[in-house]
Length: 221
Image (cartoon, rainbow, N blue to C red; front, side, top):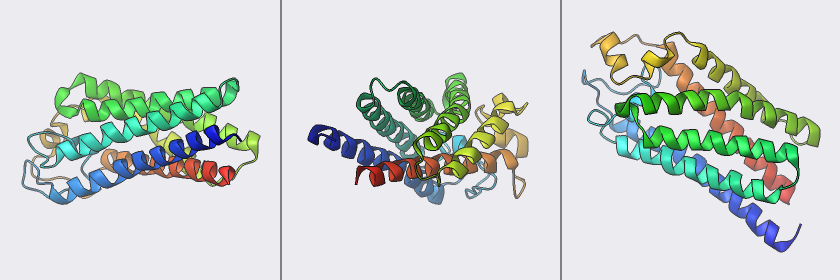
């Protein structure tokens, strides 16, 4: 590998890891400060990421949405760099191109929070659709290249959760502003599956991308 390519590869790895850091840390910090419409504390078991990014209710909504926006852009930069490095290799180019679209969907979720309405729904729907596509391409790439396959489990989990969320008959309703509050009022169930499913999906995608960057770093050495 040439010196220029190794520099670009390190940039891709570090930019991607920084994006994952933003996507992981900002929701946790905002959750600690959250106080909802019914003065309830935030719970990952029955509150959605969309609620955490809702302005006028979530005290640190700007932090969450900023983390999604800049974290997504960081992943766009990481995947775009990898795309340039593998130019001419059709399958890998397709993998990283799909990764760019997935990262842009994450960016759009931060740019258009649930208060915006339909734009938020479109961004989340794109994220649901691109996740299984990227996961499939990623798993095939690992199989073809005989790389470490630790990332297959979270990629598969992310794909299944995304498909489940996309096929949910109440998907559009759950992405509407104040849906959770209008449904529950002051009494939320201890565990609300759509909310938990969303957090499990985000965690699976983050873990899968972390393994992806880890494999890249081992290959670099």
